[in-house]
Amino acid sequence: MDVSYLLFILMLSVFLGFELINKVPATLHTPLMSGANAISGITVVGAIALAGSGNADIAQWLGAGAVALASVNVVGGYMVTDRMLGFFKKKEG
Image 1 (cartoon, rainbow, N blue to C red):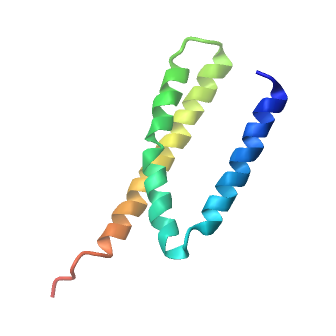
Image 2 (spheres, rainbow, N blue to C red):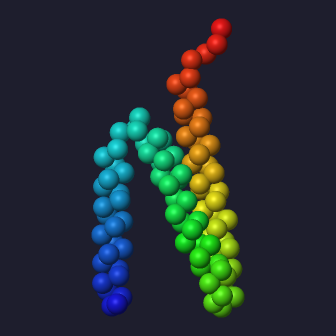
């Protein structure tokens, strides 16, 4: 692929993402972000595939780093979601 084509896609996705995030009300931002972090488990699958691909050492190191960072993102997403759902539980007493 041509580099200018890839840069066009990158700039378009940055602009679209910025516009979409700005349209989200503040009350919905945290639930959407925690759900997106939990869904990023797909990144873990791709990173594991890269880390175990048997390619050059740099690919394995990058894959291992991606697994670690994506795992932190997934766990954080679940923790925030669990905390938010705790706000809706009835208090005993």
